[in-house]
Length: 275
Image (cartoon, rainbow, N blue to C red; front, side, top):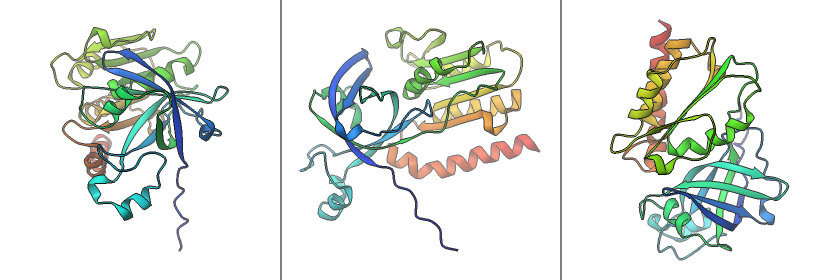
């Protein structure tokens, strides 16, 4: 049987309207321009885009055709893909906000965001997404690190009225907290990513009933907390949004290549819980 062709996300080129240093390690880049017409975000609170960034020294800039670049240049000059959560989309103004975690010159997307100026162009595909708070859940649990903080921030205003919400977000320190009422901020300090937020979740008290769970961030702690919530509440899959956005010591390209193995390990955890 012939399989239907895989639907390709639309590639767009946004123009930087403004930037904001939200915290010492986070830059918000707001994009606009006619190319964002019909962007289509809004159904989910974890919408994301796939940025297409030329590496340093590349002899081309946005807009570009990735297939043409790959045909004409060596691999080290090919654009790199980086996945970022949509912080907000204002369809009326046609403005898309994306938050970037920055650590000096580390990486490609962070330094680009830190140096971005109005008028700069950014090429991306999307949006994707799959999670929005269920109106039928007894309560809601959200757990994230810096990388998934934008999705938590987008989800909080969409929570059903009257439903209890427990939100835990791990950041480096107090200066990285944002004005998000109801969030329990956990400080990583010099510890490994995810250790502090995992400890906070395991020590917490909980409302009655089965929650709708959102656990996104570094793959190690995400997997550990997935095991916990499945064992603690027997959360059905339709109320479980769990994603390893990244992994310590891996580039995104390498992590995406390894992620099927991680998914298989998560499936093995699931099988062990149902034995």
